[in-house]
Amino acid sequence: MRHRSGFTLIEMLVVLILMGLVAVLVVPALFPRHHDQSAINALLASA
Image: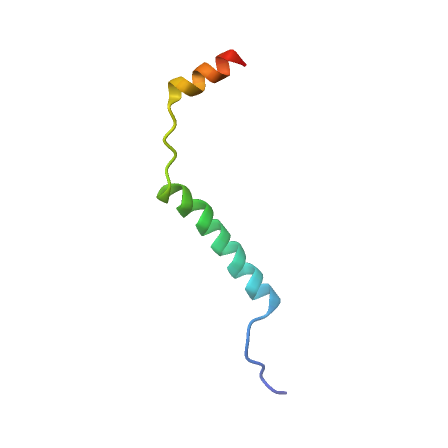
């Protein structure tokens, strides 16, 4: 039996899922949203 080097499909999927979770947590921290709450309330009230 010979040993294959490389990654299995499951290993690749796990890494991609972990990278996605990290991105979901990190990106909002790097680019915070600065909304004007009074403008949002005015738009919601007029709808």
